[in-house]
Amino acid sequence: MAFYSDVILPRLCDLAMRNKQLRPYRERVIGAAEGRVLEIGIGSGLNLPFYRPPVKEVLALEPAPKLIAMAWQAARDPAMPVNFVEASAEAIPLDDRSVDTVVTTWTLCSIPDAAMALTEMRRVLRSNGKLLFVEHGMAPDKNVRRWQDWLTPAWKCISGGCHLNRPISSMIEGAGFRIDRVETGYMPGPKAMAFMYEGSARRG
Image (cartoon, rainbow, N blue to C red):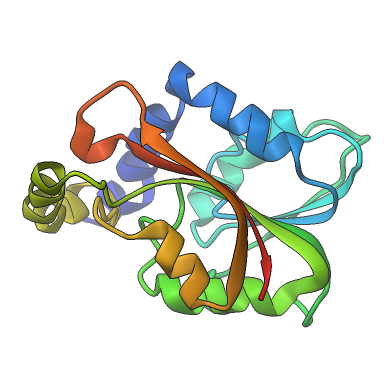
């Protein structure tokens, strides 16, 4: 079980996130980041090549040592300092109001206590900072939501705790953020897994 959770599962998740259809989402979300950036769940570092000035530093938070080791391979640009933080999103080891941008890409679905993680993101974000996100989650269509609710218990067991049915916008607002912009819609693929939320938010 340890080999599966530490090695096999991260590689399966990494393969899924390499989907070429996700590249435009990455480009838009990462392209809006600036200043000192905290990325939640850096994984194997798939977002790192998309960071450009005005980003000055990337704090790459990831609880899985195996994934951090993989992400080192993507952190090769000397012009973009990347510092890895081996920690949980529910207890971010940074000072209050110490980052300019928080980034989450397909991460809130699998954090065990997503509400606590969002509260922590708000804590470390500066007053004029922003949360940038792209996540999959609860669909607006009743029939799709039924499938999401039915599939999620089994899906969590085989996908590292991923929930198909989390209401991303209301979760973000419930943590004290004010959403500035959110765009939603289905990307190609099974609808139960393909409803996307993309946008930005600030401290409420």
